[in-house]
Image (cartoon, rainbow, N blue to C red; front, side, top):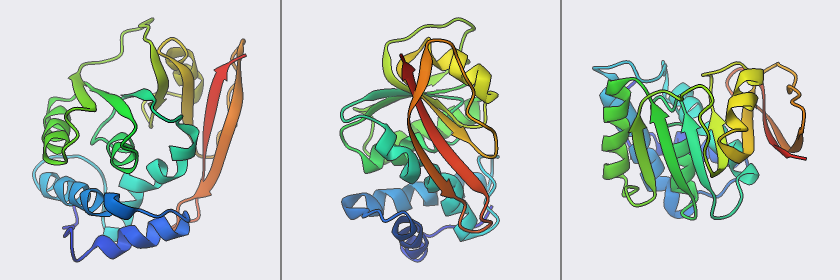
Length: 206
């Protein structure tokens, strides 16, 4: 895991935000602190792959920067299989209007996210819950998202029981179909270092 310094390496965050035409404002410092926390914890436990500062910034922030327009103002969202907290912790730092639940079964990652939520002043808006999503589990969230935990078709099925809007993060896959649900918004983007295509697609019930 590469060492990320919140002051020295923050310009990498600025470059990624500029590529998305995004103004970080007051979120810049806490976003950089989040990357530094991931880097520090990553020295002793497996959190994310980040062989360079730029790669770490892409893994932690690119999806959050891209999908933010798909999340309604004041929404409460659930992130299933939240891992190290991206994209939802960065999204919560960018968007003070949001509330979130981070669901994750791996205890060390849960411990990291709880530490990060506390250190970044998010405890009143973001809660971390240890455990897996039960099959057939229902919820009343405004938005459900999951990154690299389920196949797209399965996540659309599971997410549709949790929230009024489901966001899928896709690479080269075609957006799946589900009876009674339809795409209502989409953001296409690319990983700057590789050019690999990405798309975030939001679904709602018809």
